[in-house]
Image 1 (cartoon, rainbow, N blue to C red):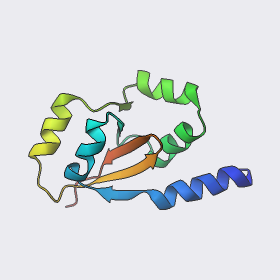
Image 2: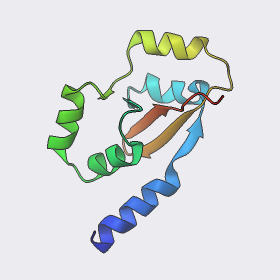
Image 3: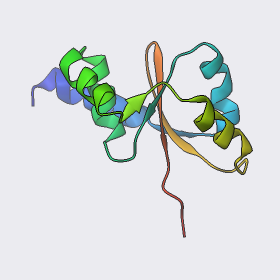
Image 4: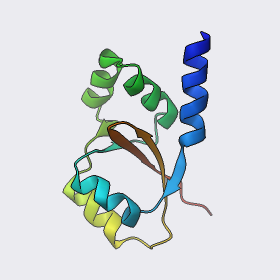
Amino acid sequence: MSEPIRDLRSELEKNIDAATWEWLIPHDERDVIIWVDQSIDLLEVGMAIAQDQTQAVQHWIAEQVIAKPSEAQKQRWSAMDANFQFSALIVQPYVLIQERAASS
């Protein structure tokens, strides 16, 4: 991995944070939320978007593992406990979100 890519990966990794749906609503209203399925790595998606890897992003869209949130998802998230959190990563202009696994 080249130094610039390693630096980008490190920077994005540091920027992954927890977020509640309430915090994400203003971003949703701007239509910049991208939902990332738990089956793929949020950081990997962030790297692909930051590096304009169109082919990888189009593949994930076709596989339906990244997408704009559906109305059903948004309604479910709005109805969830206020403590429910997402992992969120800002890759301008987008905010990538991934549901965190339920803790036992």
